[in-house]
Each structure stands twice: as C-alpha cells, then as structure tokens.
Length: 229
Image (cartoon, helix red, strand yellow):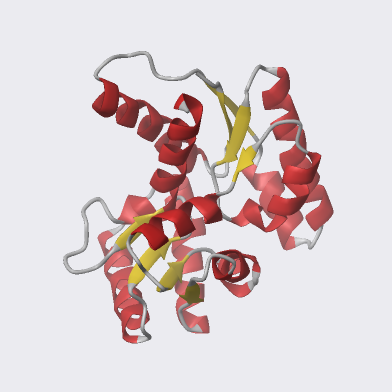
C-alpha cells in the first residue's frame, strides 16, 4: 500500500475535505480502519496567494515543489495538491518532483469521459477561469470547457476568497452561484465541474438534473485508488 502525500493549506478547508474523503471512502469500500498512511504538508495559503497576485509564478511553483520534496522525505510514495489553481504549474512540478504527482485535471477528465460529458461548465477562482491551463488540460482529453461571464467570475471569486476559504458558507452565496450554474447549462454545458476545492462547501446536496463534479472528491478518491493499486 502506497503512502499518500498531500500538499495542503490551499486552503485548510479543502485539505480537510481531502483527508476525510480518503478515509471515509476507504471505510465504505473495505469496512475496516486499514486506510493508507496520509502525510500532509500544509503550506502558507497567504504566501502562495501573494506570489500569484504579484505574478511571481516561478516562486509559487517552487513553493509547491519544495512541499512535494518534503513529503517525499517524510515517506510519501506519491503526492496530490489539494487545490486546482497550483495545477497551472503541474508540468513544472511533475518534472522537478522526486515522486509521482497525480493531476486533478486528469482525474476530472477521467470522470467526465466515464459519463460521456463532452462539454463541461467550470466554476472556480478568477485565476483558474481566466488562464488557459484548465481548458487546455481538458482539451487534451477531448473535452471542451465553458466558463461564466466576466462579472460572474468576479462574483464566484469573491465568494471563494472572502467566505469559503475561511469556512464561511452563506445561503445567499449559494443561490447566486446556482444562478451562474444555470447560465453555464444554457451555454451548452452537459455537466458542472467545481474547479475550486472549496466550492463543494456550497453544495452539500446534489442538484436535481445537474451532473455535478466535485474535483476535490474525485481527486481524493483517485489518490486512494492509486495508493491501493
């Protein structure tokens, strides 16, 4: 059984989701407490955000690489990054990592292809939705992505950073995001990907008639399956 390394802290709330998902999913599947060893390296969310905002992308990428190397030294056999935005550096991180790093975008694409979803609506941070790495990553798998209008991206981004990363969940924000989901479906989306690992906090229940893809859960389960393979 492989030991799982999690680059956490981006944010603490999503790190908790990953840890709980891996453990609970193992219990459901196997009915015992012999889940894999999980090693978490929690980086500074504030510093990472500052580096991204300042355009110091190389330093931000090195920050994640250093975290993965620390996980390796602690005994992790492979790593996952418990956030979507750092995956803009995925190729660089993988190239400089001493252990395999599982991509959240590849894990999502696998789930979408299983359901034969060819067009997916993306919800996430402004950085994730206005840069090309996510769309290009999905396009490599033959999947097209549609994103909200600029004003809607600002709304979602504000909800993520001013509320969700702090563990604050408001009904008003949930209703606003649901309206944006409807608009994505009107644009042709066959499913909605929560391409921010805090967004599942807004959706405790499935949305009737909507294929909702929780990237945090999908990624965490992929890590569990890889650890058990």
